[in-house]
Length: 113
Length: 116
Image 1 (cartoon, each protein chain N blue to C red):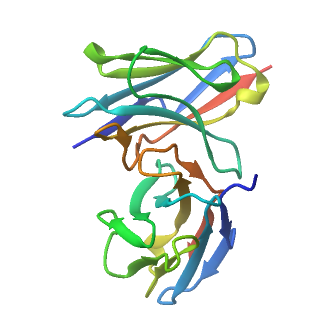
Image 2: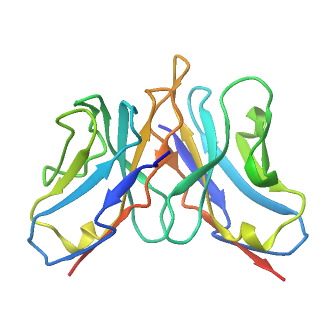
């Protein structure tokens, strides 16, 4: 079946602009995670959704970052007033529940100029 | 707090040679342990995981890892490297929430090169 998909695959923006990154999880997966992978680093946890609600947003670096999952399926990560330091690959993962294995999408590569 | 240390950002082996990628973790409670592989321009793929039970875990593509609590290690091995094993490998840990895994905490990754 279809895996986790993320759009766009690449995004180039200018400092100060607003961006939205989309994640389509595996159908039926109730848990959804966002991670950020900076160059030369492992992925770092940002936020976890169980259904429509953000169960854990402790990894969001500051209030410029926000994520939603209004219908418990697709999720959007929103970044306001982007900074050059936000440049990274943003990864989305989904699982069948809190205890399930996480399946990752290919990521969105964000470059802030 | 949990953390993961992967020794060696780059490892190079010859085709047919043993692959050994090292991972050490710190955790105040017994964690769940994972190895993921990332091929260029692809998402992370789960290779294997340890939750409970047998400490030697077998995964896909001939890889295996052994959980050693006394050494807080979870090293990844493969007896004979293949060219297709060239990729970046990430060790990760998560909390054990009453039998369910939580958010993943990753190491910095080890890039494996395989020479013909």
